[in-house]
Amino acid sequence: MYHMFAEISEEPDVVYRTLVHTRTAVTKLADIIRESGTIFVAGSGSSFHAALFLQSILLSMGKVAVAFQSSQNREFISEYIPQDSLMVIFSNSGESTDSLEALKRGRNIGIRVVGVTCSGASRLARDSNFSIDSQSGEEKAIPATKSYLSQLAVSVAIGAALRRMDVEVIPAIAKRIASEALKDNTNVSKLAKLLGERVVVLGSGIYYQAALESALKLRETAGIHTEGFAHREYLHGYLQTLDHVTAIISLVRQHNEEDEMVLSKLSSHSRSIIRVGSPITDAAEPLSDFLRTIGLIVRIQMLSYFVALNRGLDPDNPSRLSKVVR
Image (cartoon, rainbow, N blue to C red):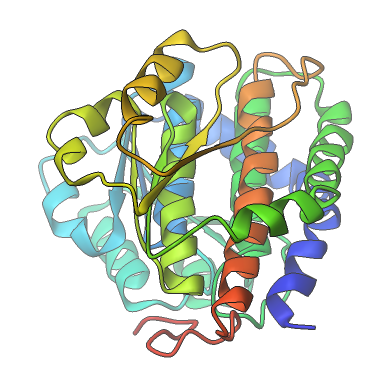
């Protein structure tokens, strides 16, 4: 068995552990966010998609939040931003050059910096004003799976703390959603056989970041040319290169007529349209949609794994990638 599959299989326990063991730290961070002005959220690769996820949660609550890629820190973090700003940096290792450069720039201009990392001993954790260990444990496969899901779980916990919700039920709900997704592996392995050399992943609203992460996972794990878009955005020029050898994966928002209208337009141009959803749960409103993202991501990670196997690739070790980008 490959490490990637084993690490995906751990995810129900990982999200539960993250939501339980970060509770005290997240409560403190929620207080920091409440007293801060603009929240800048940074990350690279999968961690950037986690940054977009937290941005969505903060914007849904009326907080001014700006997500950016850590490598672009000079373009977003200038000496002119207000001193009550806060920067949250997501990084799996806490050691990547880009995340450490963003940390250094934030500290140099005098704003508070929060590091969210899977390693409490990392430089990001040590040198930030405040840090959270996402509790994912060691990850041996290069593609981020359980580490990414733990970052999403931290973001959900932040949203719950800011809303002063009863957080006792959330860990069990998140674990159940991830577990149900894992049970779908037989269907997912069948879907993997439908994908060719080109894939477009569509996701709108809170699922936009999931579309970007899905495209990245298929690209890095299975070597497929994949791009992610919001549903209607794909109609703006990108549609011109859609053909019958390109598969469409749509991350389904429940009962969304606008998304279905877009898929109807695309159906005459694509050989296959695959809908990927996640079970409905209203038990943690108003965060239920964000929790459903967990189920989507688990399915996409499994899909990427199975496609890699079908193509004779090692999903643990993409040939040009490393776990820490320096």
